[in-house]
Amino acid sequence: MNLKTLELRDFRNYREVKLDFEPGVNLIVGDNAQGKTNLLEAISYLGSGRSFRAQKTAEMVRFGADFGEVSGTVFSQEREQNLRFVLFSGSRPRQIWRNGAKKKTAGEIAGVLPTVLFCPEDLMVLKTGASQRRRMGDQVLCGLRPNYDAALTEYNRILDQKSRILKDHFDNPSVLAILPEYNTRLCQVGALLISYRARFYESLGKSAAAFHSQFSGGVEDFTLDYKTVSTVTDPFAPVSQLTQELLDHLERHYRAELETAQCLTGPHKDDFTVCLSGIDLKSYGSQGQTRTAAISLKLAQRELMAREWGEEPVLLLDDVLSELDPGRQDFVLNQIVSGQVFITCCEPGRFTKLGKTIEISKGNVI
Image 1 (cartoon, rainbow, N blue to C red):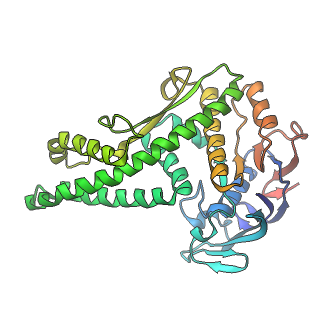
Image 2: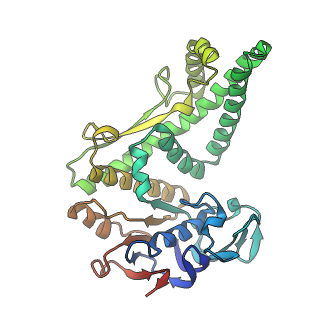
Image 3: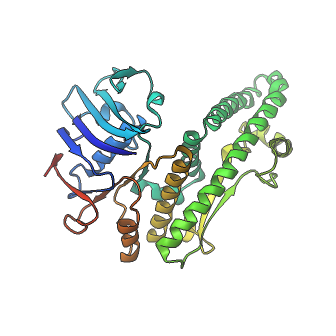
């Protein structure tokens, strides 16, 4: 799988540009604020229909333009395919095209150009609260397992309904009559989530550990520990056992949930920790260690996706070299050679032997 060409019109700071890419490493170089990250955003958006930076579609349209376009030619699923997005600066909905046919949702282009992105913001996933780590895991799992996506949607729906019951019971105590029914269903679906997550994080941790061992020359031992509800003795247990253990935990928190009007326990509180040689990165990891661990997780994510789909996703590495020692820079630049890779860098001429170099200046290709 690889992106062969990319065309941008009035996208971010690009007025009009067409680029051809190598199936291997593509190094995007230039000073800061020239459009390197914008280029990665366009590639990521072309494959997913989602921006890792913009909250609204209009933010990606070049200032002063009525609309922008992102289109590309992809060799995927054993054939050449074309993808195209038309983005509008106002409230008009975007247009999505695949092989000349207009599509209603981005789901209809899923799998044509899967990408895995590392950007500096990913460092915060290992440093901040649990919600961002859950979101990271959920995004990958939803792509790998459609049944997990459906279960997560159902769990969140039931959780919202239960929250309303807990908030309303002060004024209307009779609503508590239906609370046991919601608790039971919440635990049944929650048990499915835990079962999926336990297996996913086990695979992700093993793969990331192998990458990190290469990064560190075998000096640091990478471990990922999945954390869920305390009454769950074995997250790999049958779903029926997990359901009962979740129900037991809810019973213990019943009074506290009524008093606080909050859903205090369940897989919506799940988390995972990453340690290097027993040291928790969240509390004690250096910037270099945290960056290396985050890159290892992204490479592991890519490996799991490749196993599932039979094609290696395009790897996007934004500002990946900062704060890495020379040995770890060497690993990133010279060892990540499988599949198609895009790397942004501020030092033109330094890594010219890696593959194709594309120099960007003020939204133009030099």
